[in-house]
Amino acid sequence: MEITRSEQVFQLTQEIEQFQKRTILDILEIGKRLQYITKNKLYKDYATHITTFDEFLKEIRIGRTTGYNCMAIYETYGDAILNNSDLAAIDYTRLVRLLPYAKGMSAKDVDNLLTDMADNTIEGFENNIKEKQGKITTDNCSHDEITIIEKCNDCQKSWKIGKKLRG
Image (tube, rainbow, N blue to C red; front, top):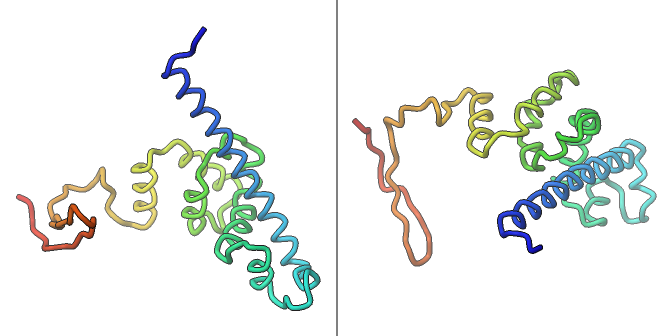
């Protein structure tokens, strides 16, 4: 029996979700190993010309920011994600964006933070970040002040042409 297009996209979406979980688990493993290497200064023994951890990251083709983010993700969320596999479905970018808010939290608070953020829509996630920053969220804004923007249809460049108050 042939599967419908709807069934096919559902199956493919489920497979993508599994790959996403595996990716986060791999990031945790990379972060764990990088943390061990830096903590024990093992990078100095990788090659004679390497004297810093940053040089080591460059040598193994991991960007500095990515390397440090992997270590921070492991340090901050490792236990929570490894103890609750559903949390491994959270996007890498979201984990990075939440790092400033998760630093110094108890394990229980980190778990609650990730659980709260796991199923948010993109807009819901952005609103939660804005709320944590003390900014107005899109669902609490009256949209009284707007910016007028023009955009070129040919090259897609856009520019602000002014502000106005609605009303």
